[in-house]
Image 1 (cartoon, helix red, strand yellow):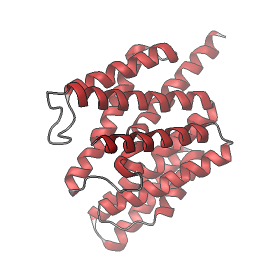
Image 2 (image 1 turned 90 degrees about the vertical axis):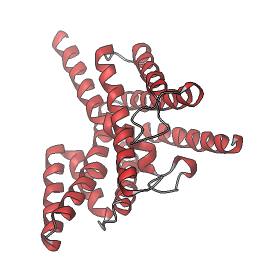
Image 3 (image 1 turned 90 degrees about the horizontal axis):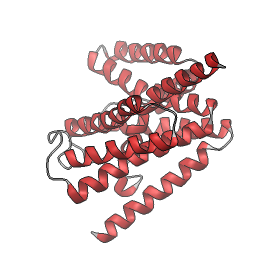
Length: 247
């Protein structure tokens, strides 16, 4: 058991350090890295849903969404329509639409934050990690009351509170985001995690893949980040506009 936790921590630390390095890399390097993330997530989710979708389509949607989110969503709908029309199956259409938005559109918000400021991206990364780590260790050591047991049997209310307090504390000291908005950000991170758990329970898998060892796949590792990034970007843009109006 001790070896398991050490291995988990080593992988987590490695992913964290690489993520920080990528966050401060040149924009074209960051774009390539997130495109790779989009590719892997599209492959993992498609495999979990037992649905074939060329991951390169998700990368194309990601690149277009980096230019304009709305166009990326329209492109997702177009490819989904083509796929659904070819099989004449509503389920195929919905699966394609989900994969393209989840793996293509959502990662594009990370690039949008990077364009604004690498330090804002770093704050988002650390915030998500703090919520995740706090909830994990508080739940592991003090968790007694189940939190959505059908979705994730190991998650507890104690862990949720630990992640909530950890995330709000970090934002209070390291960010200009008001606490009330910070509460919503924590909920986005939790929803992202539960959403991933819901999919895994529905298709009967433990992890989306094993590429990150005990952490599972890239989808398992970056689920909360994908759900939090759009809201964080909106808050950052709001704060920037307020500063400019007062300036």
